Length: 111
Image (cartoon, rainbow, N blue to C red; front, side, top):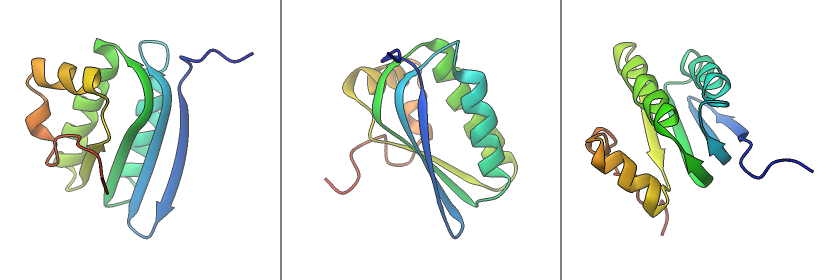
């Protein structure tokens, strides 16, 4: 039986926009794979959207990974957006003063 906190990524690419739907936990054990996949997409797509709808857990390493990917995207003229943050994850971004980096603030899309 798979661990419910294991990170699963569903990737969809349409034209110049890639969406990464995350399920499970973005933690020390999964951050490297997550970083690799998103960096690969940033080299192909102009915009990468990280959808955290199914994310159940994130630690400081996961938070730092997203911040690092944001900086990488900006430095190469790409856009990285984070959407659909759960309240606790949104609070982590807010406490660490990273929430303002993401234009839509992680609010629900289409809601």
